[in-house]
Image 1 (spheres, rainbow, N blue to C red):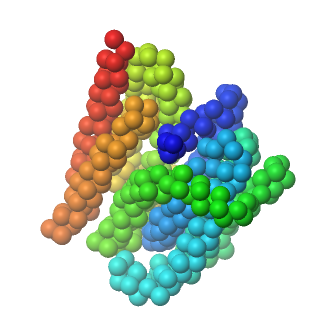
Image 2 (image 1 turned 180 degrees about the vertical axis):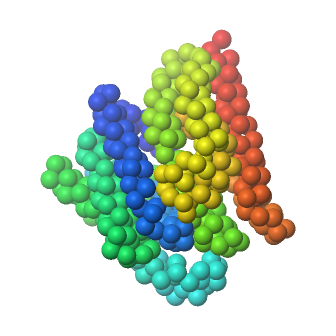
Image 3 (image 1 turned 45 degrees about the vertical axis):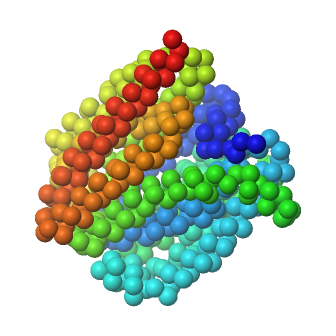
Length: 433
């Protein structure tokens, strides 16, 4: 029997989101949840300092690193089985693993001094007592989210995203106004996560007949049947989270200090908003169309070029506006203390431009079954880009210079990956003939 894969997961989601209405429900929640932080940014950025944002960025990166694999990625498999008992067993297994990992994450409390030395920062260790509960909340939310997907609760999933963003950002702004300092950023974010998790728990309890299944024989069976998720997919997500957030933020903090990371973290946060909004919307549509195109033996190359042209319409203005006016925009919108972030944005936008172009079609290797090679290319990207930072920092270069070179390296890699995607599409078309 073939072990279910992450491709089966995406296919299952598309099948469950039968109508355009359901897709739009999910999309609208993502859009609003991204727009709210952007609208409140001028207030929040004027209340908190770059150092406050740096501590929050490092804390969230640590939580995301652990919570992304806390359930062994079994939570992703909840939507796959036709048998409801199996789905309940997978969910139960997910929660068992989450509780175990959350408890073990308390080990970090014993490593406060080590963390302080690693980050050259005495503030972050003060929040390590929150790691266990944060992992429990975030990982549980992810599991409830997939249970909601199985039941087709698309509107409620959308509402949970909106609640998470709205409540979290409002609490951050309120606590900042009450002069809680950096505490407001972390506690506000955590309460937003908690509210959305509780909301989904209540909705699932009221609208579905879902209950945990304490059949350990069946739990053991599904753990084995869906072993690809902890053995393969968890490595992918762990490598991605480690490289793009946790390790990258640590490097910047260690070599250049918390203030520099604060500027950079804000740049990443706001430059990724259009990519997440537009790119994710295009990506959902592309994956569905690509699967149908490939199955019906039609041209993937034509579909790729169509999406490439559509993405350029959004990506080119994004590049020009930030590339030419990033410093002015960040200073005007966020305040004078964020001028340096605007300069970093002008350097970094080229990398985001190429990411903008390739992200809507990044499911193509999934369609043509080239996930392993795709993962290898991602690892090369991480090694080269992060290696650039390490080597140049050790040689004594300034962060501005390193960011420019880092951006160029990532841009070249993203461009190469985009060309590889095109090659995959052309190769698939040759099989039609």
